Length: 129
Image (cartoon, rainbow, N blue to C red):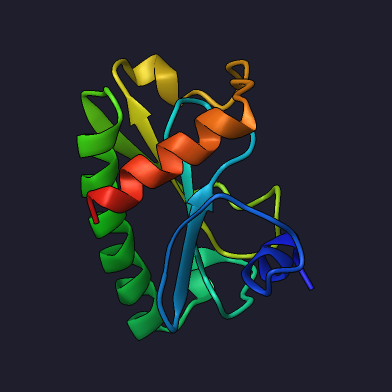
């Protein structure tokens, strides 16, 4: 069972943004920027492009709603999308608010946000869904 499956199951706490019967979204605890969100299918599949077509398209549409809510909640020019998938063997999409393209570089130092800041950011995004 991956760490994402454990988060979805409620075994590991997270700053949940949204969920439905197939997908789950929560703040990245090592964000590149405020509002950096992970979007995952509830089904445990290692690689994004191994998802069934309906799951992949559904995940993309779920992520779209979140990206628009993030744009309204966090100061940014856009919300970038990144799919890397090596760090956790569970398909996922990174939604990263950014102002400059360099903000999307995963080699950048990660932010250290307090639990209060994370809670506030998650609530702000949920308000715009």
